[in-house]
Image (cartoon, rainbow, N blue to C red; front, side):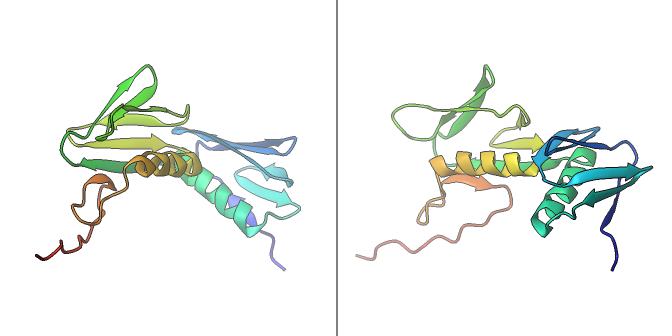
Length: 163
């Protein structure tokens, strides 16, 4: 039987305390819950009892996130759709009678360009959840293709009504 051993890249530190595993690096810090204790020797890390496959994938995502970071680019497609940032909130104009206000999570950083904006974070779970929350307010329309789209997403539009 082989032991599940993880190698930490240079500049990454890892610790566990009372059921929380903390991974930190140059792009940020990620914490997650685990019942396993962390044992470390040099850049080698062993968890006892062993991590479940789910926790193991979260740990690998955390290491990748604190070293390189994750980025999700969203694009607004539609007439009058806009986004701006004020006081750590995103304000969307998505064709509703009132603007949509969303608090930006503390782990997420936002950068804007003309019709796109980028969400960056070391924690992939928080980033994906926030992007999905934004998209939920104006999911892409199947007839016009308007809405909040991922950057490389292609919407196949349906044919309109024939009269």
